[in-house]
Amino acid sequence: MGAGSSIIVCDTYFDIGQKVVTWKDDPSFSAYTLHRTDKPSEIYPFQPAKGMAQAVARYRQRRLIGADKSLSRLKQVLRQFVVHHDGCFDSKTCFQVLHNERGLSVHFLIDNDGTVYQTLDLVDCGFQAAGVNEISVGVELANRGDALRFPNDYKGKRDKVTCKIHGHQFLAYEYTKQQNEAMINIGKALARIFPNLPQTYPLAPDGDQAWGALSDPREYAGYLGHYHVTDQKWDPGPYDFKYFASKIRSRMVFPALITGDKPDIPEEQDKAEEIAAQFYDLNEESENGGYFPVGPFGESKLWHGGVHVKLDKGTPVYSPFNGKIVAARMTDDCAVGSRNFVLIKHEMAVGTASLKFWTLLFHLDEETAGANAPAWWTKESGKLSEDPITMSVEVAAGEIVGHAGEAGPPGRFEGGIHLEIFSAEEIGDKVDPGFWKLVDGVGSGRFATKDIVDLIDKPGPSGRVDGALSRVELMNFFRSNPQREEFRKMATHHLSEWADNNDWLATLNNSRDFGKMGARLFKEQIEPILWWNDDVQADADLPSDKMVWTYHPITFIVWLHDKVLNTKAATKGIGSESSFEGKAAPSNIKDDGDATEGFTDDEDVLFGANGKKLELEDLARGYPDDDEKKKKK
Figure 1: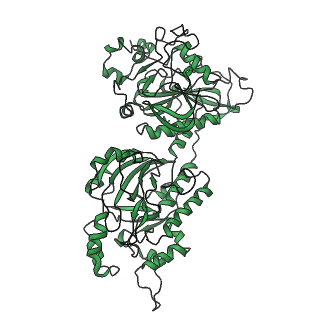
Figure 2 (figure 1 turned 45 degrees about the horizontal axis):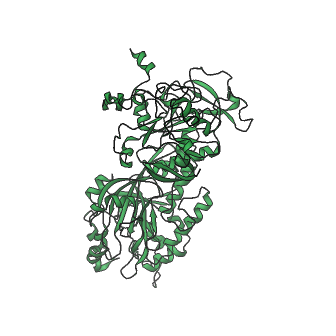
Figure 3 (figure 1 turned 90 degrees about the horizontal axis):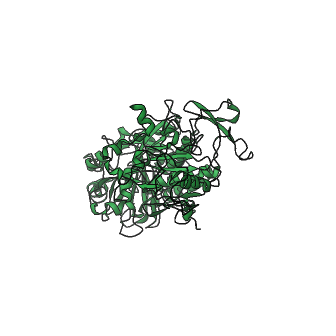
């Protein structure tokens, strides 16, 4: 038996950073086996679940996929992940019960030590949750479940907690730390593989985790428990969906790897700030300017919404957060170097705040076909041209979206990227009031406000300041002036430098910062890099007035990571053992260790020749259990 760290989706391996044993590694965990694994001479299960008495196969193909078993097609169909607990001591026992006794299957089993067993390719349909098998993936967590019935099964080595499901209180065993970590690793992997699988869970009216059956489970998209599908089940008991969702949403990374073996932001705040300090140095010690929030061309007081990060040409560049690539350009260089970019739109919840913002990664190297090419480029490369194009391509935090190019003033190119984070509305105070110093520069046009300029502008030989910023003044300030740290926590509101409101040329010509070279500067260095046009604005959902709030991107990444990490994530519905009221729940509400119903319906049982009578409209609607049908007659 072998083991690795990858799950199989559409016959393709995806590393999840977790110990995984697939049915290919160990055939004794294969739901594809067409007989009992304990008695190969016996075909049918010996205590079959409802409808499975004469079923040879313990799985089926997904009807809505048909012959197209590609990942792109599966992404269109799969929209749920159902969580169960198995009522068993371990995953081996669970598989025996499912396969040999019940004639059922589930895609994943997670043992007490966190080992993940995969019994089916996700492209195929398991028999695990009646009514939603067609559109879901399932997992069984090894757990005896009912601690009232089995009070000594773990000999005091596993804590007991309470939860109230369908209005009835249960005393249940908690899940192990290793199991929770395995679930989080699976969830993070699925967030990359299936962008259309929301990282959400059913909510109660008070905004906390819901603890009862949904009125129409087939219409739901996201993670859910078996008890959300039917009021006859209570598994997975005290599973904390709220905490789980917060962890799989929370992966955030630095835009490039400059230390260690992965770009992930450490959970320890001091370690995260140590890496951030290295990024500050890569920006502030550069001779090519590109500081925040001023100086895109090395010597000016023009607004600059991001920072230039010095990197070797070709260094992989990552998306800092989950999101969608909404615009990009790949073309030839101009006088200031690379004008290639990727624009990523992000939408996320932090506590009670809903945030929408964009990450701009500019000065990227031109991509070429090959194994190192980003996935979005491989998909959209045929459409790329000198003009920016729009798209909607899901991208996960930590996914490579490009490689560092070269840029800088003419004759002084160096490897690196322009990194910028901006929003249409101020989002800092929605999450952490007072952290960001808000600077309203809307009235100052293309130039930074006087209070920012005055901190940098130094007296000349005459002892007077001239109101302009030289390259030397900018370099000295950002290399050695302690006040530069104030700029790292500024949120500035101004007209985006990437949009031309027919004012760029007039602004440059009328400014003594540039003298008579305004027209030439605009034609050679500014106009070629602009990308914010009407098409991009509409498709990328950008603000129509082109006014943006910009944040120091490195500070923003570390700050938001800390806010998400420390947001109270535990559900209120899980209580201590001492809060148990001592009353057993009704016997008709079972977990997967006891029940033979609630796993399949007509959609599963009639698969094959009999199933040809079913119409696509019926499949999309789903089929209730036979008992439910009788109730409606």
